[in-house]
Image (tube, rainbow, N blue to C red):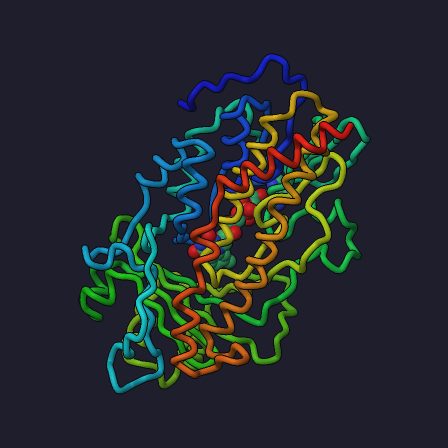
Length: 428
Ligand SMILES: Cc1cc2nc3c(=O)[nH]c(=O)nc-3n(C[C@H](O)[C@H](O)[C@H](O)COP(=O)(O)OP(=O)(O)OC[C@H]3O[C@@H](n4cnc5c(N)ncnc54)[C@H](O)[C@@H]3O)c2cc1C
């Protein structure tokens, strides 16, 4: 049963969250933890995640603790790190994927951080979050169709013909966000995500099979194999029972015209993409179970994340390519800042000022993440101008690449959002 939250009796407003992914649920938990009344509207018949592993860095872990330590406890229950004790703090061991002088690709750099490669099975982590959400605030089968901001309230209408009225709306409805479109209009150049030119084959391998073929070191510890036009990463999930595989490639014409972004795998095409790569990578591809292919899209930057009483958060605001392993962690940081600023709001009329403060703190960092994730994809595919396949330069960039994400001072962000809100309130 979900914990009991004490809603502040003076708060006479309610917030609607549309979308119950990692972003929406962390925001709901954060708001409840601060005593803010909230309802979640989810399109699916139940909370669910697609895809397998998601890697969460030290900034995500700190944000969880600051939102509600129970989120962090849940994360600790389901996270998986590298198996070898001396690899616990490694994020990835980087290897030259096409360097066939070694069967495993020469290991040329180990990137490490406080939490190491700390990944969760998406559905397991979501279960931990769901356990913190009271069932009476969750509404399923509610696919948002339209948003009407009436100035002093927001009316949201769903595909099943029902509607709801709340003081404000936070759109956490992912990369194809309807709330984003409602904010900017369908024809705005930043309303829709654009193709990054990259795609990913994703699949799982039972760990015992992977270890038998590739050996313990490669199978049980996170690895990234870089090559021209692609890279392949592997890391253990589900307490080491499964190896998660994501193999990235480049669409030469840079176009994705298919309305579907996730396609069944064309195994022959996948094998062709990595022809001539080291034996370890071919072994990985041959073992991948239930693989599928994902076209990778990201969002052009918007000039704001809010208008009046409607705001966007997580992938709805700043969907990025996955090359920093940071999309979900940015959604969790958003949830932290949103919940801390909303903790200061007692009247519905103050919500737009809180959204404005959230926007000022979160937009620059999260939009920069989108840009850097795009560049990260080029770096790993040996296509980044100025670096290409100059291994010394690639290694040098790797040595600092993730620092601004992982070492960010979230407590300073909290102070900043509170300061902005207080200053803007004092100006009235
Ligand atoms: C291949 C790949 C690998 C990735 N790896 C990582 C990683 O290792 N680390 C990391 O941090 N990030 C990673 N990411 C990014 C990460 O998955 C996302 O940033 C994160 O899941 C976003 O969470 P969210 O809650 O904002 O959106 P979502 O998870 O998309 O959730 C949106 C929710 O809204 C619901 N919804 C959608 N439309 C409506 C509607 N109209 N009405 C009501 N509900 C609606 C959906 O059903 C869903 O529940 C990866 C992404 C990809 C594609």
